[in-house]
Image (cartoon, rainbow, N blue to C red):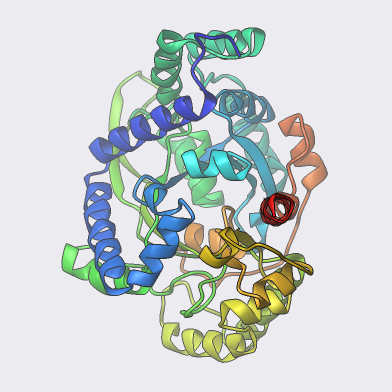
Length: 464
């Protein structure tokens, strides 16, 4: 990186802030969500001083109020490949593959996000990025028409493409170019209320699937939600009606726990917004479209492959007892089944660590920082009171939860149907690269913290 180049983290932070400001202006209810989340987080930290202490000690506290994830839906392989290049300028890379066809949603996805502990703590902005699967559209004529419409659009400004190429060529951007880059890329995520199809085509696409109409019918892939992070999603869910927000019936993800795992999400239904369609005579006609909604998340510990296998088993077990209805009519029964099934998953940090279900960072205790001698492996050092551990935040997503949010906010009345149709090889070919393995990154962060503890103790031993 040249001396005058700004860091990818600074570009990412600037873009996240610009996106948040734009979305607050476009969707005022997002601002209301932010007020609610700030209130709940403040109340939670006041009520749980130990939680605040550990968040401060691990550098997680400062990032929570700024933390966001967005979601965007793309139409073509070329759009996905270019989006990967744009996000790379911000230090964001594709992590994980998600098959949302499990719920009859014709997309597959990845999450672009920073990797590595330091980058995540500086700004953990994530964008859940989905690619429309035209191969899942049953109507061959409609499939071809959708492909033709998508082939004619350009979702990036010429300046955004040029600045991305400059960043690739020169290894970064200076302050002025970075500022221009943020402004130009923001245009891709902006709402457009004029459709690029006529009303007849829109309704054909809509009848095939609401999401297909959302992806194909507009000039660009407007961001469809921006999500703040809360420390108590059940409290947020309970308070939403006070803020004139109607929450979805069921919080997606695991049940309420003392030790949160993975990811829990709730939302309010997508807004019906006015749009215009140009008819055959070139006259604009009024219509409406439903796509953008509000979402809130609570993040817990990242699980190991063993922990994730247990989570998946218990989730499947609960859904065999009660399958959640899209209209929320059996929400209480589903929540009871979820709690019953997950009683098998340890709800204590020490037990989760001892059974190898979650990832942790390790650090020296006050005693460990002054220890003259130390012996044994990390478990022995914990026993001696020299080392402590904290859960690593889960930075990724859950396909069943994402699909549940999509279905709820698309307004589909049918029950969710979880029959997988994954095609990761095709997705990676369209992306132009392999998606990164989330488990490798959590394991790397954990091991680096263990190594740092052992090095520090070794130096103290040598000093004696």
